[in-house]
Length: 284
Ligand SMILES: Nc1ncnc2c1ncn2[C@@H]1O[C@H](COP(=O)(O)OP(=O)(O)OP(=O)(O)O)[C@@H](O)[C@H]1O
Image: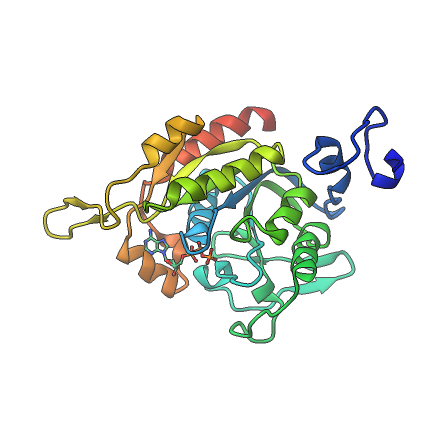
């Protein structure tokens, strides 16, 4: 097959297959909406569902917004969107001749999610993979994000077709891997790690969610899922730990009330600081 037919952007390329090839990745990137200017795009991923990926995405986004940055969240978890509910957004996104206008939280974080387009927020999204992936692409190409310092993407869980397409279509500047302290964790982190490596996307670090519970009486940390293995994994793959989040019933209640932005927890301060240090210089 000729390079042009493969859609390869590198005329020197002699590979038979585009799989895993940096050149093919370049050629599959979608153009950002023309009225948007996004300085840094960070994906939040997990090797499996239910570890609190949306929770971590929202927490880092709020911390970066508290630092004074212009922040957006693209909810790419199309079949399990939870971002609008966390921020109490029930209004529907509107469109105009420029594109789809994202909704804004109380503190002006811009949000786009399939739940802002559905008539009923509890309507199930029963769509085939390519349609799911195209919807995420449209959130990149057709949403008028305007100027953002950071766009955080709550990635679809796992390492299947939809996350793969998102990895290939949106130019991610880095990813954060979210995990929980269970036995399966090593395998799951490595899946996400290997996927990012194959796609040549820098891994910013690991976040362990639901790490422990703090006893409300004595303040002792209780490891309800057993001893964390995160230190070992971090050393083995050579990726930093950005933070550990406890199970916090107060924040869980804020989520249920759609008031997530009011959380007070310094558990991801270091993560926000590291992201700030990594990207701030490039933005001047
Ligand atoms: N550290 C925590 N403390 C309290 N509640 C939490 C914590 N982490 C997550 N939760 C709650 O657990 C539920 C699931 O979290 P979340 O939606 O972030 O998971 P997810 O990994 O995005 O799920 P999926 O991958 O299946 O979409 C939510 O109601 C969230 O508020």
